[in-house]
Structures are given as structure tokens and as C-alpha cells.
Image (cartoon, one colour):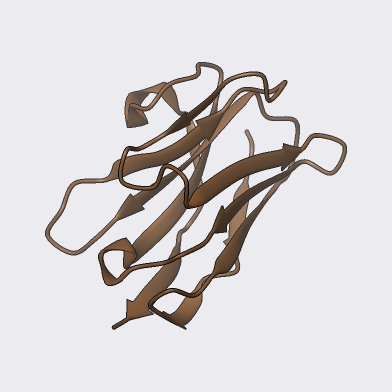
Length: 119
């Protein structure tokens, strides 16, 4: 069982930046960041394999968000730049044994952290 704890969310103006962090209680394999806005389905924002050799980004965040991980510290990060109001959502960290953009690929989930972007 792996526990995930996100941090770094908050309120930011459009055009600003935030860095989300996710601390894992143990070794993780593939990891990803998902988000869910009110009334919308949960979507994968970014994903990364254990080695970091493969990454996935949703089209809506390409060029603005960067996913990274520090395996020595069991940490996952999401650097978010040029934030827009449509990025407002609860962001979740996820980990699993399979890499992909579907939530079904992931076995462990954090509690989520709120990101609010004001216009």
C-alpha cells in the first residue's frame, strides 16, 4: 500500500505559476497528475514512468506544465506555468504499476489539492 500526499495548491492569478508536490510513502512505478473541475470528469494532466523516459501531457497543458520525479526522495512534481482560469480544479497525484493516461491504470491516489486561477 502506497500513500500519496499532495501539496502546493492555492490561489493564483492568470499567468502565474504553481508547483505541486506529491510525497509517496514508498516506491512508486508510473505516476501521474489528474485534475477534476466541478461538473467535469477527472482527466489526466500528465504522467511519467519510473525512469522518466516517457512522459504524457494533455494537449491543453503542453508547453505550460512539466512533470518530474525524484525517485531517491519518492517525490513527484508538477510545475505549472502560464496558468489560466480553465486550469482551476482539484489536482490529484496517482501511482500505479502501469503507465498511461487513464485513471484505471493507477492504484493509489492522493486526497487532492485545490488549484484556483483567478482572471
